Amino acid sequence: MKARFVDQGADRYVVGNVTQFDQKNEMFCRPLWDEEMLDLGKKFYMTEVPPRNKPGYRLKDQAMVNAAWHLENTFAQGVAGGRMGMYAWEWDQIFEFPLVPPGLKIDLDNPAEVTDGIKRVAKFFGSALVGVCKLDRRWVYSAAFPFRDQKPTPSELGDQYQYAIAIAIEMNYQAIRCSPTSPSSAATGLGYSKMAFIAGLLAHYIRGLGFKAIACGNDTACSIPIAIDAGLGELARNGLLITQAFGPRIRLAKVLTDMPLIADRPIEFGVWDFCLKCEKCAVKCPSQSIAYGEPTDKLNNISNRQGLLRWPINAVECLRFWAANGTDCANCIRTCPFNKPTGWLHDTVRWGVRNLRWLNPFFLWMDDICGYGKQTNADKFWTTQ
Image (spheres, helix red, strand yellow):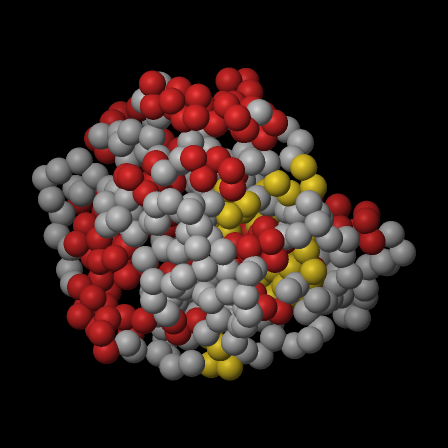
């Protein structure tokens, strides 16, 4: 499937003065310092969640979630601030084989070939999608907020980091269909662990070519606008990135580097127009955190960025549901019509969304008739894999 190239990436959504975002205002950070959110933080981060005799909430479901998050939580902590383990800005070369003489640099006479090599290595390590863009400094956090310290840390990203490599990791389709129960949460956790694994290895590969590289999860910069700039997809009503192949069923990481690369062009394949007609994610959101109607530049709270035209997410209410649910939620991914496995039928509909937009109401009707987006009983996840 070929998308249409466009001149603007994430800048297409800018309608006002966009400044760098302070990460402490991100919803997962606010419960650690915002007095109005402290009780919510205790419920979400500190309250024990006993297993229930209910599909998706049994001990085996919870154990799978914790196992899926293990690499991220133990060896990366991108959610908690990054800058360690797989996300360390500099790696100690404890043991390498074969030993390579220090100071070597790859020949950059053919930057297109080098860029293609970076993408091939990213996919070899496990990335489903990869793109390159010039790093727009508006998407870099003005200050980080590491969970470990629980205090703002000014951005220390040097000017030499001019390029970003956006990486998308596919999440398991069958597990996401169980949202908002634990198999879906395990798919998310596994995505985060894969993010750290793939981005960390790719950053070290670039260092091996003689250049600087910083692997990032949710830390350092905003992933979605970088991925849009790198040509991986478009912004949707649910506040997530929609890709052509997987819809919103992906996790995003990035590698920031001083290596001169060839930037990809942003793409457009009908997401914005489709979201104007479709409100399935809003209807099926348990906390009603997703906006109906037309996009706006108005804010719900300080967790929304200023100066952007989009459907702002009420992340406070979203996190309240997560705390009450005892695990996270991906209903906005599960119910999205773009969340389909590839195949001739779904690929044909994707072509229609891109080229025959007057048929969008028909495509939505067919999505309902076929029963897509409905929740799967989590016990079936254990018997149908």
